[in-house]
Length: 101
Image (cartoon, rainbow, N blue to C red; front, side):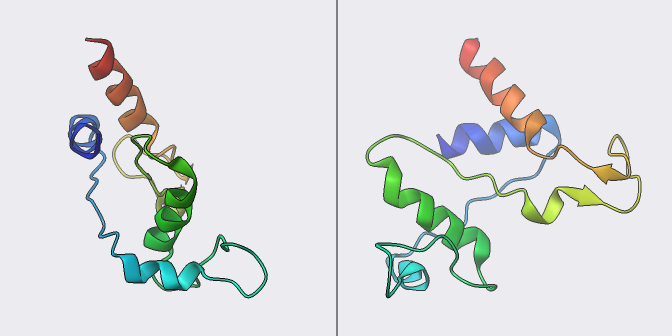
């Protein structure tokens, strides 16, 4: 699934790469109150976000496309206009089209 998603991102002009999901990164999501917390802190947020999601997917194939850092821009660049970028949408559309073929 990850290879198909990275390929769809490349075809859509949205660069993606796989972050490591080492077991020790789960430590950041441990909580004194809850079973798991949904914020591992400021550093490594994309990875700890994926680690959080991994707690709920079981054996279901999945990917985490983090858009937080690219959701908005203050200048135009190519087809991306100032404001909300929609980054990730083109990848998901391309992914779905590839699956349909």
